Image (cartoon, rainbow, N blue to C red; front, top):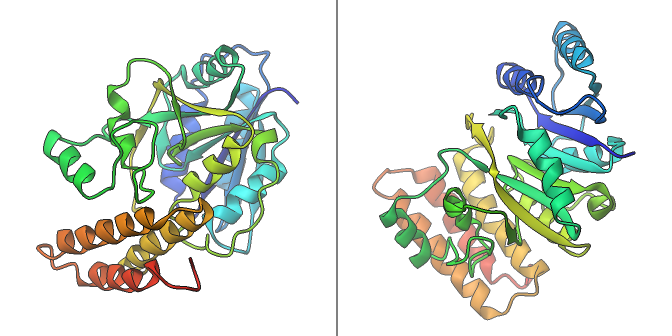
Length: 300
């Protein structure tokens, strides 16, 4: 069915989620558009809260689907959301974002303006680097010189320059806090063994799948507020380790040559050095564990 499925994958963030949903009810989209809101929950929301969501969304003319799952993990939530979605376009929003009143209409217009488009992403307000920060990211291979490209080590740091764009541009990846796809481009999503718990790089992986069906774009007019509640419920060591390990898997999936793995080695060494002055020993330990995996024969 033509329309928009708005998906929020969440767990135990009622305040954030409520703020996000209320921002959807202020959209200036005309009434003839079909909108459904899907919450995929790794926890379980109180019935009173669900009744509130259903009431305010129904008043706006949006349908509402709530699914509580037992297998945790963001990637599995994405997979389930695609199964549940009935509209031809799927928008993924983080539970801690707020969208402006033109967001839905601008998003759908971007798809109409670009017939080859299978995915459109936006920009998080405040997500930007200083000049020196950009230099550091470039030298540590966390960022590419080109806004729509991943770095040599497969990092998505280029998104920190997206706020500078003045018009829609092509990209090879989107940012998971506000990314959208044509359902047909991602309808075959399956569970992935290495995308568990804190699914670092899952937005890159999903973007790569969609690219097989068409072109991805970033529209800088799709700006939202990302409140950035704690990024992970896992411990710092596990997060750091996963950050390295998952990028090894992404390089493997891309059939990267030695340069990609060497660049990731350099990026990881930089991240270790960056954490030393902060005495962030759990993260340092995690990055060191990740170093051992970069050239592991089991992975590459």
